Length: 228
Image 1 (cartoon, helix red, strand yellow):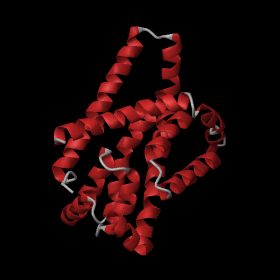
Image 2 (cartoon, helix red, strand yellow):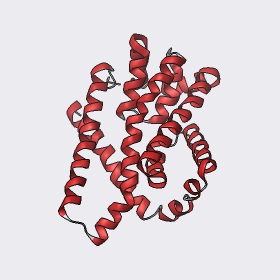
Image 3 (tube, helix red, strand yellow):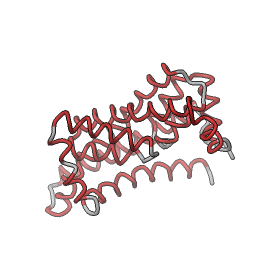
């Protein structure tokens, strides 16, 4: 499979995942979303509980995209963006520490033959901060893989924590579309004028451009597409 085709498929996968998640939150997950309104309705207690849930799911290798998306659904764009970013950073710390301290041999055995890990180790040796930042910002590698995978590298705590600030970008993308999920559902059922659909189309194009651009600059610096 050519690199161009792989790139196109990865971008379509992210966009398709966002669209599918919007569908799920308005259909199958709707009853759960209604119960989850406890979190935004209970102020700081609800926010802290939501962040603790984020950390737990990160430990269990759950996809972070859904949690970021639902943060937007529950707390709106700005609140969801901040909470998703803080939660992602907190959730990234414990798996990294556990791998370095206790799980190194087990995780190394699981990822030893992965080209992704070889590329990460090489990039960390050259510039740890840039490697962490670019992989966090670009959606190229799944969140749980990075949390545990970086624990197998020589990246310092300083570079790891500073690099994790890159998660502010995917947090914004998912929180934005999460905040639009209910509105999109209403628009589909009741209709909207051309200005709404024009703005929506522009948002979709911008989202795709951001994903493509960030993926490109990441691959330009980190050889994540090595052959097995």
